[in-house]
Image 1 (tube, chains in turn green, blue):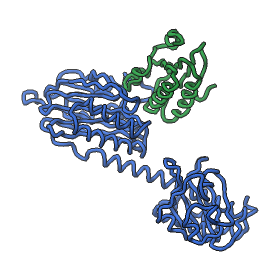
Image 2 (tube, chains in turn blue, brown):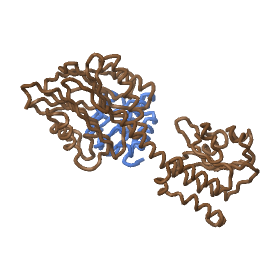
Image 3 (tube, one colour):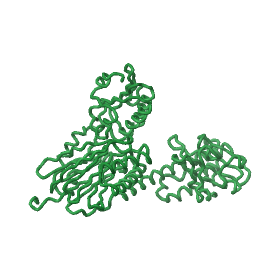
Image 4 (cartoon, one colour):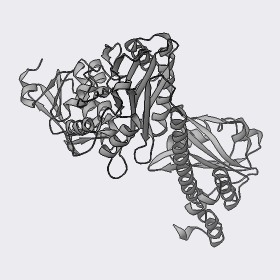
Length: 113
Length: 408
């Protein structure tokens, strides 16, 4: 499924949600639905793939924090892939909630947990 | 559609439709709604008309305007969605007609006390969403027809448009005045500390950015900059609560990490779901050093005389409201005379199509160890060159006065 550049897929036993190039208040609810749906698949590991994302404001940060809280309740472990927005994610402490990888391959290589 | 409406009613309908958006500017807000309800009542030859607004937070309908049924508004009638006559309309999103009004069909005692025999109501809809209910009543026996429903729905379109526009206006005005009331009117006199500020709302719409400066009973100087996620009135309200809570905790302890930890616990408990980034700095009375704790907020840019400015090396903790019990750390920075600290919110540096690191580099180049007013002007000039900002911008610049020998 794709909605406005959001995509969910399985990579083996790991679920991957790919996020769009820009995340702000305009598309935050689409991104939220995709991530929360991804977190409901009972995957052991959910990878939030932001490797294409070049802009993420506080609305995007809020979606990631909400996903973390939902995933924590479902015992799904989160990993995040980011390059351009890694600075903003680190600033707000997302790196304290889930490991951040430079590439999707690196995130997948850590195995299904 | 028009064919089922008799000519005489079409004329009356024109009365309702004549209230256009142009009239919004002429009539005062309350007058406009009252006029609309009066015309609705006349058009439908009814005895009462009332508009109720859906309050999503409480799940209740609140009477906001009425004609011939003014006590609904003055007594602050509230009807739970799903219950009673109006509650059913809101829950089912469709018109409801009551040919016999009694205890079994209505919840609101005012309708019974008034002696209303028959009622007809339709949902108020904006953008596919129910925002309230419009109903008319008859003090004598009456059977409302499908033509009546159609007319009331036309009136409801107009009423819904007016209410939506009034609410947007009210929210904007309220958010702006709230934001204004919360930003310090003046900065406290603080010895050798010089300060200047800028605040620019994004897209002409205020958000949750704020700054605060106060002296503590110990003589220390407290400085806050923060950004609540979201915009408009909801963000401004949360910002107001965070700001007062932080001030209260600042009186209890001068440890910035402890202040933010208490603030975080308070927000987690009372405002679940709200997120904010905050940096809180406490300057020693003699300004020799500052202790800073950041909850997900950008550290200040620091400029000392004769040195290029740089982003202060402050580890930032999780933003406020994210998860319970986040670690908070304090960084102590020495301040020599002439040093400038430039606190800012993300609106200053976040631009589509520009990497954050590039924007930070531009910011650091713009910050110099000059008087705060001129630093503010230079920074705004360098970072906000064209067009309105997409996001709020708050900028707070501090300088410790240079010693006599350093004066240019």
